[in-house]
Amino acid sequence: MDAQQIALIVVALITATGTYLATKSTNKVSLENENVKNAKALYDQYVAINKELQEKVDKLEQKVEQLQEKYEKEIEYYKNEIGRLEDLIDGLEEENETLKNENTILKGGV
Image 1 (cartoon, rainbow, N blue to C red):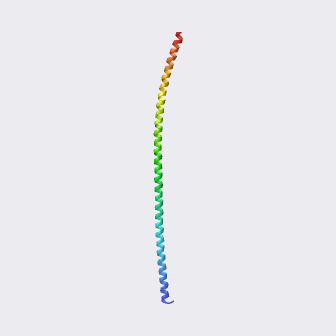
Image 2 (image 1 turned 90 degrees about the horizontal axis):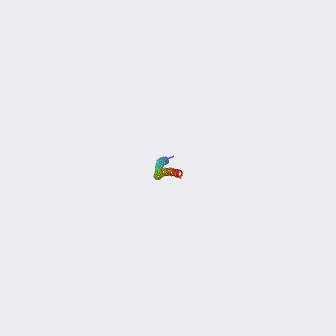
């Protein structure tokens, strides 16, 4: 081999080694960039899902509060209604006793 062929082989080896090293680092950078992009996409998706779930939870909490208020009002209404009816029953029982006594007096007086 003459010097020109050896020089050509050395240049080819240096070029090949340089290309390999450049490609290796470029692939590593590309992979890192792709990983960062994927991580950001996953994080954005997580944030969107989390926001959507929080909105649903807030709506459910609001509905629970509304139902609780509604049922508390209904319970209060029925408690008042029970009290009113118990008072009515007491009055009717007193009236019944009075009428029984009057009836007894009228029967005895006949």
